[in-house]
Image (tube, rainbow, N blue to C red; front, side, top):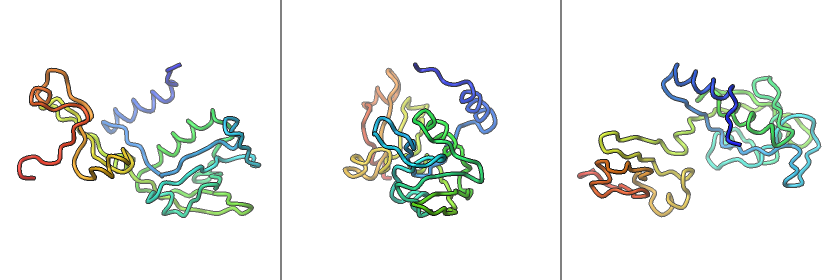
Length: 187
């Protein structure tokens, strides 16, 4: 049930060995299969994937993509999102796009085909960067509207404590999970 395909593991290991980390691109696009049996939604198309939503302020919105568009090809290669089982491969493909490098999408909108240029950004910039403070034995995360919209509304500045190591410096000093740090010293 929790098995990870060997091709995914190999890709992640190769990226870690090459770059020391795995970066993912962000387009702001959410996908839905063309034949979605859970939602009883059947799009009359033979290839592509349905763009179910586009995040506000995202590269997808800047490229003028809309919910209801069908992404047919990325840089000339067909996109296959007919069924729900196809979506993980589609999402991996979009996450693997080169950050800050334009890609060309063939998009079907209504009855017409459009050529769209999309420039993905770093997923970390949108969801908030993680930072591990090894000397303090805690991990913090930047607060953004994508990581936690409610928290961003209530406290748009500061950093969120994601985890505190039991018996570590942070725990001993009184830090706990879900704390928000708003000031360190006079900064």
